[in-house]
Image (cartoon, rainbow, N blue to C red; front, side, top):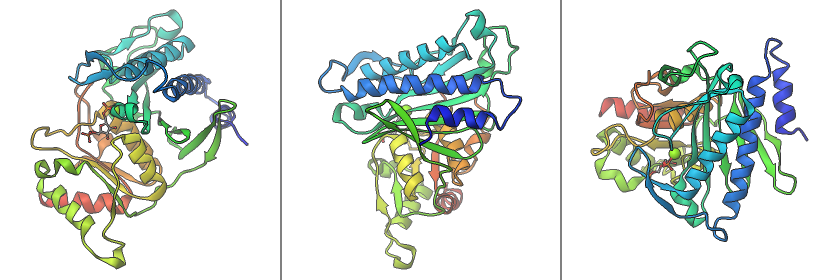
Amino acid sequence: MITLGEFIIEKQHDFPEASGDLSGLLGAIRLASKIVNREINKAGIANIIGATGVENIQGETQQKLDLYANDTFKQALEARGEVCGIASEEEDDFVSFDTKRNVNSKYIVLMDPLDGSTNIDVNVSVGTIFSIYKRISPVGSPVILEDFLQPGTEQVAAGYVIYGSSTMLVYTTGNGVHGFTCDPSLGVFYLSHESMQSPKTGTCYSINEGNYLKFPVGIKKYIKHCQEIVPEDKRPYTSRYIGSLVADFHRNLLKGGIFMYPSTAQAPNGKLRLLYESNPIAFLAEQSGGIATTGTQRIMEIKPTELHQRVPFICGSAEMVKKAQEMVEAYP
Ligand code: AHM
Ligand code: MG
């Protein structure tokens, strides 16, 4: 039985020049995720579900647990001192951590503290997504916007926590994808899924089909492809949509499948946020052998222009994503 802490330290030994800061940072994420997990498990009996009555900068209603998760991760990351700033889906602007230790650190974190938060009230899986970069501004000074607007290819590490029927933390530092399951009686994450590999293809497609009429023609054609009866290709595929990106991606990573949140007539850039959702999930997808694309461009190569930027997102098993991409390119 290898714990997450032991695994991180073991991996750190592969890099003799490593300072241990990234290990400490992942330790802060591990701690915050346990605290958020504890609160989520109380949803329904404690006064922590429901909306705050406040909208975030993107015009979405913030849930109480959105804010709780945001504050918990922010505090844990600031307290350890390995992070000089964060940006979050729930914050209007990036946040600079200005203590001496923080300012002298080299990492920044971007996060969606509680992804899929409309699912909290109905006891359906939610998650936390995180993405870690090295700052580009000089160590010793406050962080600047450019630190946060780096393309996904510059990610040092990324991962998610899924608060599901069990709680798992899945992460990559660019050396494969590893998953850890929390033993709730001990509050310890144990290595349960080492070197996770996305199946090359699958039988599951995942998209909010309620938006069908607003999708580009290529996406409509791909959905019809998924629904065609072709037994030798295991079609029709199965439709599965939880409405929590983390949970939909996690299922497809284990079983094979494709997730799509494309552009729609009303939202030409789709819904998902490049920096907090698409890039970290894309890094995990690629590290497990899958693909993440807008339909016409590799997600991780997009040069971000603003913090809360959205992008169309297609991701999952390589063969399925390539097929969808062919159709999107042919019928934009
Ligand atoms: P959130 O971060 O505000 O929870 O929004 C992101 C979520 C994703 O988890 C999910 O894939 C998508 O929104 C669902 O959106 P929709 O309800 O439009 O299908
Ligand atoms: Mg989200």
